[in-house]
Length: 469
Image (tube, rainbow, N blue to C red; front, top):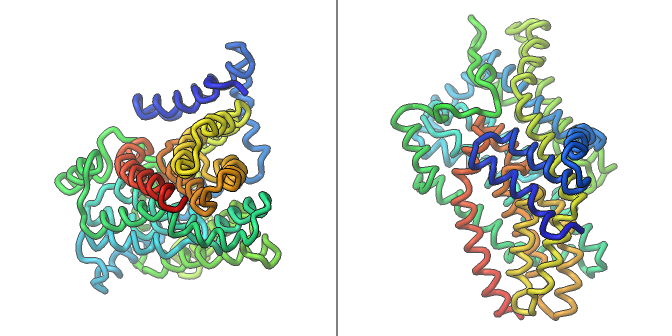
């Protein structure tokens, strides 16, 4: 354990990223600082930091996440070039499904709330469907990234029959909790951050009222038509998002709808296959990768069958799309590397140990919530936070005769809140990518909403701690 030094690298990286807007440099400096602490040497720390970035690919799950993130660029280029995106927008307008900016916002919220199999798939599908509409109705990409982010993890963590629920139930089983499924169900109405975050994004979508940096972003988009700020660096290059349909192709909505449907359907199928018949035991990263590859295959075959694109054009567009998301792949690599660095430093365990000194039966839930929030914010992972905090929260609640479902709900809420607020979270990165937003702009505009829901959750956990003790 490196004590307070263990929290320096992630906090330094996050502060520098928000302050300087140089997220690549900031993340690497955080990794480097961590390895300087670990090795005690400035130059050895540098070589170790570089090696840590390389070692990210030793984990098959990390590699799959980086690959599927880049492959989304291929799906974007294919569906734009074959006229699918333009056809989808025209179809929506012909059906009068979306007539206003508010209508586009509500559609994005409904899509995000409806797909809760896996958080990354939620972001990707919401972004794919809503982004062209947001561009047409002059809604900021920051708003879309916020909707993608707030309807992914906050919703997935409330559902028992997906990878999130299976993971939490598995952690509870490991702690010897009787009726772990029943305990998980009891956490749902007590998972205050997830419920508040979902309610808040719904309110924003329906009311179209904003505050803080988001209000400025929405004013810019509405008044000037600039859905992204001047000087911003979207995680998807403009060469990908601004690609025009091939000259002479007919705009057909089916060329976008079918690949997206293929991606949605393939997700549970893949979970069943990788879980050997048990959807809750399937591999999330493998399933997302297979789903994206299936969507790309569907887009390519549709283009070939209709003679919209040649085989060479399909291959070239696939590679071009992947190239447009290289910045995201690098960011993902750095995010995983700093997560591995904090694990070596014992950041999560150190923060968790501090919380033990502050616990009393009535304060178990709010202290656990704050601890889980800080761990997830520092490490960029909600699942890693669950793995650290549930083994602490369960025995603590039992020994202190505190409410067990409330303590577990505090872990889940804190993990999602911290992950939701952190610029090094993979879900936050995927949301920025799905919306083609500048990543730091997404984080800055989302933070006030996340903190508002977080503050509300803290108050509710405090009140519940006294009422349910």
